Image (cartoon, rainbow over all chains, first blue to last red; front, side, top):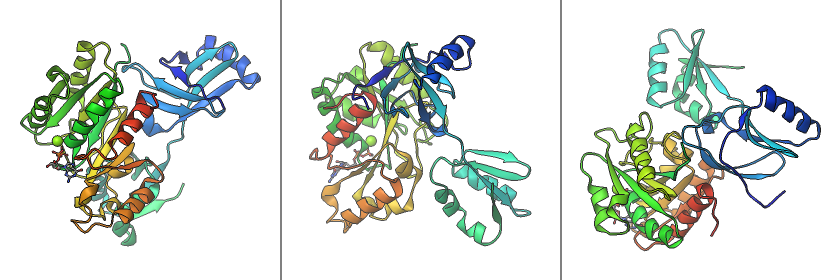
Length: 151
Length: 205
Ligand SMILES: Nc1nc2c(ncn2[C@@H]2O[C@H](COP(=O)(O)OP(=O)(O)O)[C@@H](O)[C@H]2O)c(=O)[nH]1
Ligand SMILES: [Mg+2]
């Protein structure tokens, strides 16, 4: 672990860009590509501290018009690179009982949940521990108006 | 576009002590050499901005007011453009600016800040709101980067079990930081300043 902060003030590019991919490939072979994992919910952040998988402490301060993405290259030196990895988004899959879909949709909107819809199911982005979402629909789950679908 | 100043939100219910926290924070941050400005979000008047300007803690031109209208959470979450424009204008007006503190208009426990607007945000609750507040798990309490429990001087007067309130807050926040303050006296405010300086200015006292 280094105690020195690694200051990052811009995104160099996407790891998939040919020029970058080539250099990263070589560094990766030597185990010199470090990753910073950022949760989906934290992607809009421009200024924060983060620690790479190899323990490098980073002070990230990006321009306001920049947005992080999976594969963003934050540092590229002769002997080291730092790349962003976006944490996998977990979804809660909810199935409303017949006639309850509107109400469930209203509830989700009212609670400002981030949602998607897929084949009659409501997908809720898990940004805080999943129990907290379930607690809000406890009664509906118990009464069978909403079912939690696994997977 | 340059990176500009760090933007820090201060949310929480009306009367919890957001403006009082600002009043206590500003001189402490200035003493640390932080170049700062403030944006207040008042419902219809510019009361908080006027209060800060009158207190003479900052040059009045460093205190901007955004009118939140009837729905204070809208301007910090769903459509923070007014606040973003105000912050951009401060960045332009004060080139060496390091920090912009944004006080929300006061809302219920559900208010959160958009990360498009701020880099880091605090949520201020007070002990007079009752020790069961953390257990109610409002999104503000759960999701903020730093939870401030203010008016700790009042806990005995309002019959609140402060240690229990803290325990519950810790439990629902899964280890994320909490600071207890008395903004009238300034207790705990240095810790809030430390947290902000560490997290977004990358400075440790
Ligand atoms: N006793 C006590 N009163 C406080 C404290 N902080 C704020 N207050 C008072 O609480 C009231 C509301 O504070 P204010 O900062 O205007 O709340 P805001 O609506 O969240 O901005 C004011 O009368 C403050 O003087 C504190 O730590 N202890
Ligand atoms: Mg106020």
